[in-house]
Amino acid sequence: MNLLSSLNISAGALSVNEKAISVVSHNVSNMNTEGYHKQRVNLQARNIAGAIGDNPYNQVRANGGVKIANVMRYNDDYLSNYYREQLSEKNMLEQQLANLGDLAGIFDDLEGTGIDAALSKFYEAVNNLQEYPASSTARTNFIETAKALTGLLNGKSVELSKLTTGALGDGVTDDSLKNSKIYVQYRELNNALDNLASVNKALQTTQTGTLTANNLLDQRDLILHDISQFVDITVDEKNNGSVNVYMGDQALVKGSVVTGQLDIQTAKSYCDAHGIIYPDNWDGANAVVSIVDSEGGVIIDNANDIITSGALGGLLHSATDNNNGITNAGTVQSSLNKLAATIAEAFNSLNTRENAYCIDASNTNHLKATNDTNWLFACYDASTGTETTSGITAANIKVSDNLLSNDGIWNISCAYFDDPKNYDINAVGNAQNVVAMLETRNIKQSALNGQSIEDYYSSLLGKIASAGDSAKTLYDTQSDVVESLENQLDSSFGVDLNEELVDLVKYQTAYAAAARVFTTVNSCLDTLVSLGR
Image 1 (cartoon, rainbow, N blue to C red):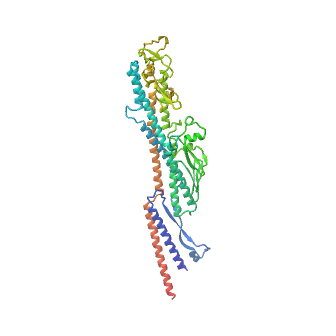
Image 2 (cartoon, helix red, strand yellow):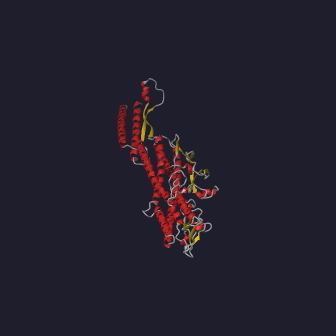
Image 3 (cartoon, helix red, strand yellow):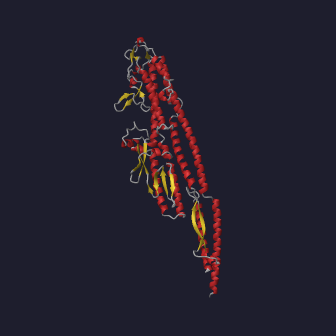
């Protein structure tokens, strides 16, 4: 019986070491597999149940050889969670950097072709008009430089709108939303949540400490890394390896069930559903993300404010003028709108003010009083199809039809008399109103944060450049952090060929020794059988 027991023990040792060698082989074959965590076989002495006592024969009979206790998967929950947090932050910064790069590209004009150059040429034309107020050439030049300036403001506004539309849609049409970056990412995130629920379900029915379970855990962690690239998440792991995933306080996945998927709609659709006038009373992003249950029931109506990290967070806050000091497409668009409105207000108020006079087109040797609709800059009212000065933005500012009509060049009010009693109908060379227009170049405008028109635009360019530099520094720093963590993860969980070689030799030696024992015991049994014949 002792020989048979020894035979079983050695046979078991052969099987255990064979399986241990297969684990080493599994590690080596997956050394370049993304997300793979190295595994180790933990061995344990096999004892036959029953009372042993002090009898040495009973003690010997109680020994059952060796067995595999479990297959351990190397992991560090704290390091993995920290890595996901930093990965989420990196992806947010990456989106911000990309947005600022596109923003800088919009305003990276060749020398002499940008808004700053157009402002300079416009004021040069004003100065020329001051010197030659009755000159048709000077007046035409004024109008042409004004058209060039408004055209550039229009063009920059269009490019900013395209940048925002590419990220979040135009805020109105579903087709625009479906062609945006955020729509693609929201669908990828929902797919990742579904995949995680499926892996969780498999883990719930798989024995822990096995190769199958460990491979599922690798899949689980890869999916969690994917999810964290889109949003910042909190992970709660259960004993069977399945996880619950939360975004803020909201559960997205609980075990095998997706409890909170993302939905997305245009800003206009959201406003229409909530009685908000769009866009007048809307200061949010062009897209609104909601969290819904598996039946489509709304859990969180507007989740934009709680999505503060990851690629989705970077996109959602890449184009919103939310006055939080961030330079993005939304804040730059707002600044350009202020610039356009201030230019229009400054020049319109002077051209239409009392005691200002323009040249009578029917008799260019005489002056005539201006009127309160003799605007230099205006925009079209879409509802009436007429010009207005209400609601002027960088997108819609234009040179008024007053100047573009026949003989419109004479509608520029050059003359001004402080005392109406000094009015001289023949004083077509009076340029006091143009002098006031020229002085706007140095006037500190309250609407422009106490800066002059040109200084305000130069400051805006500086903010864009500075924001880009800061974003680049933050992104590079965060990339270094993520890379360092990836190296730590690889060092802790990745396959080390030297370690695998040591284990391979160890298990191979044990296998050979067990084979020798098995052969010896088998030979003894053959001898006993021969003696019994």
